[in-house]
Image (tube, rainbow, N blue to C red; front, side, top):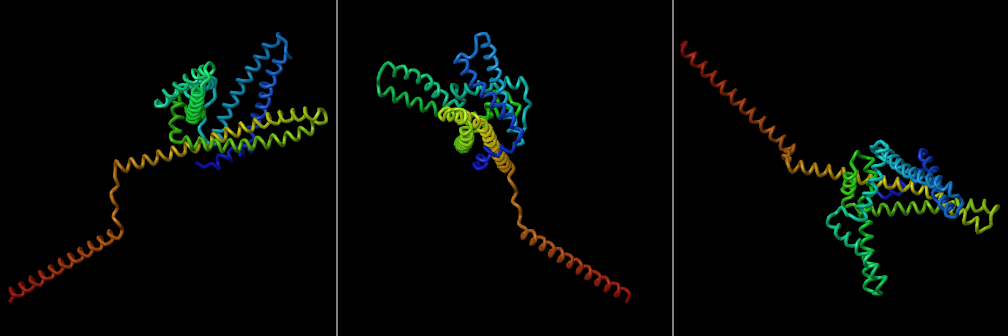
Length: 333
């Protein structure tokens, strides 16, 4: 796997002007989804208008999910993949796909060998937690920590294996179950490659987030010092800069994931071709080609034999002619 291309995919999208609308929409929706609930908790809105505000928040959540789906389609189109048409039915199926994906990640493992282990861990964690509250025992606490670590490892493994479910769903016209199975088969024996690629991508995105936050925060802090105190200006500038920097980080993450998906697809396609070639060789083994030298030698030998045969035939004919001439002369005499 080419990790340099994965890292570069986190910032090469800056040249794409079509995604500017997504950044603006994300910033506006994030402000609405973060600050409006805070305003409701403080009591800025009256009870008569509260249902309208809650309805608008629900609409913003749906619009944000649609924006993420559209971003997935744009990143697939950027890598020259086939993109399924977005419709209302496709969007509803996407919601069911995410719910089923979470079910397979958290509860019901697709791999049958790990399914019983995951269920035992899932039921054992609350039992051990209940015992730890009532009984102070080192053994129970250690067992609870081990159960949590093992369950977290299984969740990470399942999440990596099903990471490309939505991507496959919009790349191919598959059903929901077939999409999940395709993502599981596509990531077979590629867990560590994908995990390392995601770690590199997240590290690059963290650097991008810090740089944008520091530059924008410093500029805003200098501007806000004219209107607020130093502590308040610093707090407002840091919060605004972090929210502003979160949008390009999300876009860069999607581009990195699509780059990993493209490389895995390419590896799977090449491995299938190699398997087909090997299968053809096993079914129909190739006949050993004779070397050119041997062919030339054989042709030369054939030519020599033909020439000798022609000479013998010609000599026989001349002898016959001489014999016939002698016979004719004797008869005349």
